[in-house]
Length: 256
Ligand code: NAP
Image (cartoon, protein in one colour):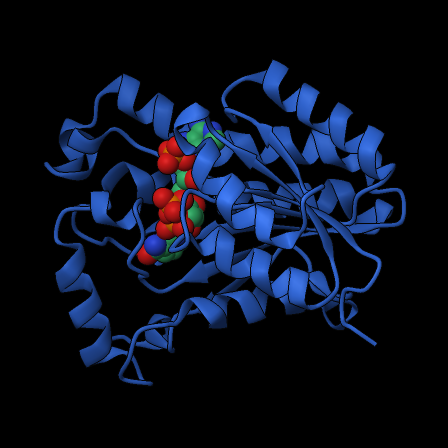
């Protein structure tokens, strides 16, 4: 029996085939889940249609800018109509203005701070609130985070602070939603070469640094993030909530 047979899920954050969201969506689909996808705007519509279309011609694809409450309300209304219920939600969305990821953290503007937190952290709360009424049989909500939330990673700057907020939000949501059997967890991924990652100054050096210093002496593969996503979505993780799971070839344990 497939791990996620009969499960209905929604995936936020596929931009292209390199997106972590796409790796997790593929793993969820292989495990038997039926999925809906969202994309931020017309610019990404074609990409998402091409990828998600491989899951079947009737795959639900909806526009959603996660900073817009009306978009979020429409997405869950349509998912409710089409699926009737929901079990899985992947939040794989983050953004900070480029200049905030280049200079020093001290220079972070009020606006860059606001945008980074709105898109990358508050959106998890808004999406969980939209999804919860549909998760009538319990559910699994997963967010994507990074180690820059707890240690200083040069250039990660305001995104590190937003990820700290995302991780804390995960714990508070896990507490609120636990009685409804809805679990909320984060996967803390090692660096993966994606569109968003390339916006971080010095990203290529980061990949080399992990290869040299992580216990496994390599970088994480997208498929491995997919496998963790499938595990966290499955009954095997039924007692895991509010956690940050490191999928980073062991880098997080190192002191030096
Ligand atoms: P990605 O493919 O560029 O995905 C980021 C997604 O966020 C894109 O689909 C992007 O859409 C979307 N997004 C940004 N602003 C949005 C908004 N207002 N509304 C809706 N969607 C919006 O990059 P990724 O690396 O897979 O990132 C996915 C997640 O993994 C992020 O949370 C990231 O911080 C996290 N993560 C990444 C790494 C890594 O090394 N790559 C490591 C740890 C954690 P647009 O392209 O339209 O902006």
